[in-house]
Length: 210
Image 1: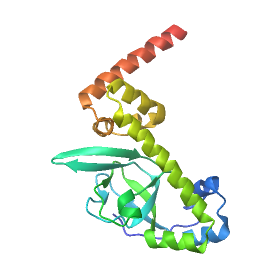
Image 2 (image 1 turned 90 degrees about the horizontal axis):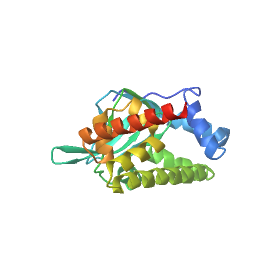
Image 3 (image 1 turned 180 degrees about the vertical axis):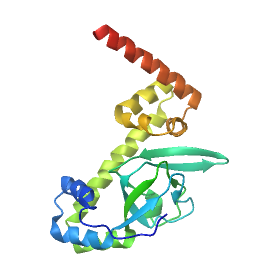
Image 4 (image 1 turned 135 degrees about the vertical axis):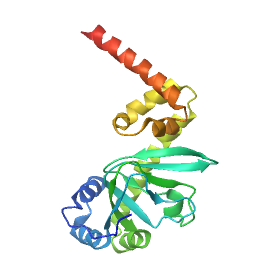
């Protein structure tokens, strides 16, 4: 990971916009964030957080794609995938301050904005209204976790793929199929077959609608 630097107000605009959509944060909170958020970069293939570590920061993705994965013997199981303008951390490692089972890896070169656990909690204490932002982010990502749980609980590969296309269609244009297959809990061969079937159905429907 690159050495951390402080962002400019312009670089923080995407973060401010996200927070203000959830709840107005005010100028004082913006100033606090500018003083305590840091910029960092991580290269494709590098780990942002390793299994067994405590996750010291929570990150906003300015550019790039990250995945979470756990290890079972020699096998890597992708647990989630995320892209620009989303927030990422390992839940156990960050919130509970315990060693995490999960790894976070860059699938592309990434530019991130991070804030340390201590600085975030100081923000909650100093500006209580920001707790509303924290609550709404937690609620939002709980919904995401529920959606991922639905995908893993279906047995049929085609149903898994349908949900993926409904919720995350942008994944297929950027993320290697081996990670998508792992996320869905199917083999890459099965994913290729399901994609081919879905493409054929879509093409037939388009012809029928002409």
